[in-house]
Amino acid sequence: MKKVVIENAVVIKRDRLNGDCRSLTIGNFPKSRLLKPGQFVHIRIPGPDVYFRRAFSVYDINPRAKSLQVIFKIVGRGTALLAELRKGDRLNVMGPLGKGFDFPFLRDKVILIAGGIGMPPIYFLAKKLIESKYDRRKILFFYGGKTKKELVNMAHIRKLGIKLYPTTDNGSYGFRGFVTKAVREFLNTETGQFRIYACGPQAMLRAVEEIARKYSIPGQISVEAPMPCGMGICQGCVLPLVSGGYTRVCRDGPVYQFGEVLL
Amino acid sequence: MKPDLSVVIGGIKFKNPIWTASGTCGYGEELAEVFDLSRLGGMVTKSITSNPREGHPPPRTTETVSGMLNAIGLANVGVDRFIKEKLKFLERFNTRVIVNVAGAKLQEYVEVCAQLADCPRADMVELNFSCPNVEAGMAIATNASLAEKTVSEVKKVFPRPVIAKLSPNVTDITQIAKACEAGGAEALSLINTLIGMAVDIETFRPRLTNNTGGLSGPAIKPVALAMVHKVYKAVKIPIIGLGGIRNYLDVIEFLLCGARAVQIGTALFVEPETPIKIIRDLEKYLSRKKIENIQELVGQLRIY
Ligand SMILES: Cc1cc2nc3c(=O)[nH]c(=O)nc-3n(C[C@H](O)[C@H](O)[C@H](O)COP(=O)(O)OP(=O)(O)OC[C@H]3O[C@@H](n4cnc5c(N)ncnc54)[C@H](O)[C@@H]3O)c2cc1C
Ligand SMILES: Cc1cc2nc3c(=O)[nH]c(=O)nc-3n(C[C@H](O)[C@H](O)[C@H](O)COP(=O)(O)O)c2cc1C
Image 1 (cartoon, chains in turn yellow, green):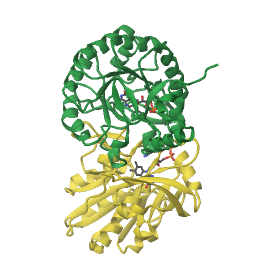
Image 2 (cartoon, each protein chain N blue to C red):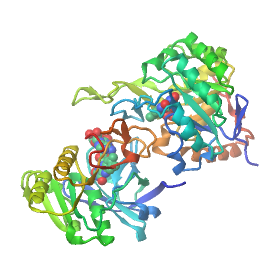
Image 3 (cartoon, rainbow over the protein chains, first blue to last red):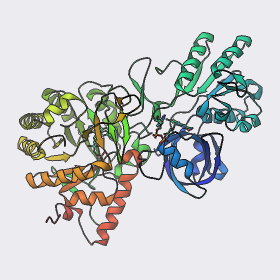
């Protein structure tokens, strides 16, 4: 029955990315191979005044090195402390947690939409699709940020050999405007059997679902909510369901079908 | 020689005094993915009510210094589904199951406990007289004669031991404790959460939609210890202590203050394996101190 592991892991690499974003590669996590796109790890951040663990989507794994990578943005006390960790520092990691993305049909054209720090799970999905022999030419990656500074690790995405559509709200890089506007314009000229996967701010996810409804495209979103336990016990991270009642984001999500949660 | 961790409460033997607290271990399904529940002395399931409850709108929880505020609003599957699915799931584990029951009024406690009477897997019931997040819960929590009456009515329908779980949000907790003892409770558990508030200074709004919530975690341990000790001196029935326990040192403090067993709550959210570590560390401590049975520690506090 044991499915979730809790490890005293170790920082093996840390990188400062654009703006307030950081990357941490975490080693000594033997079960990293079990981590699926859309799933997350719950990290205990050593330091004062940070009581709960913090949730981070998996950005990448290296099963042979027993490591995983997360990318995060400094938004508060916990992430500020996390940014101070150095190579060799210990940190306690729990996972795999949550439900990941369902894979598309092989024939589908896959539209990936990432907004800001919602990029990590979308990148991981793209990478796993390619490893699973999905056709690179059928995977399109829309990646939006407020400014160029918010777009990180573009080189990684480019290396996947898929079509990348960067967008910025102010036009400082790529398409000018919301990422969902770029998707809409794309869909106005393209035809085919599509499937969409998206992660980003709530307003973006709402716009994505609107597009999906208009064009009748199936797909999934990954949502977030502050989570105390991350395992489905406390019922603290709930969101309302369209069908009524609440869903525990940490356990029933964080990935949902379009139209499932009330955004 | 391996020290003896077992304790007896209400005539029922527990392999060790480490239980998990109501609302912090669900119905066991999730925690079972982390460790074998059979290693626990006991497990107190999430409060159940007659009918399913969805709970309060989010946000329901917020982090505070050394703890958290919660206003889940007693979200639960209701007693029918609890018996059919959740108790059934717990059958495979060799641990004591204590079913926590909440109600809007006396009659609801009695009805739910009557249904549980026919379920041998429910080794005991714990009456949640203390949930600060639903108004009715507080009525019984703060009214000694109503608490006594509720216990005695439940005793008429439930054939196994009954625990009353007490609220710290009262002027004198010993009055309620004595009333529950008089009503026939075999044990008392304390404390439930303390009423608290957190405010968002940008929006001028409370951080919980319920406005207030229950404070738990390490922040409340000193309050819990003081109350356990006060109640220990006031009643004869065993006390199960809880509030902010993180490690075996905390557990020993509770035992010295008079608790015969303890429950681990919020700590499970941060370190789900806490109970397992505590059991292991308690064995080491007892061996080192050459204490044969953990019960020898209960109430051994040397007050000034
Ligand atoms: C499943 C999941 C996956 C996530 N993946 C990533 C990721 O890959 N990269 C990344 O940078 N962030 C991710 N997050 C968000 C991340 O957990 C929060 O940014 C982090 O918890 C903030 O901690 P803090 O102590 O720095 O901020 P705090 O001081 O706690 O809060 C700062 C601000 O962040 C908000 N916040 C706090 N916790 C969360 C939370 N869990 N979710 C949303 N908002 C929160 C608070 O309301 C506040 O506005 C994810 C969240 C979830 C639930
Ligand atoms: C999220 C959450 C939910 C809880 N739900 C219940 C409940 O349903 N019934 C109950 O009697 N106590 C409930 N409690 C209270 C705990 O059982 C316990 O009394 C309290 O949290 C103090 O212990 P702790 O500091 O170790 O967590 C809940 C506590 C938390 C944090």
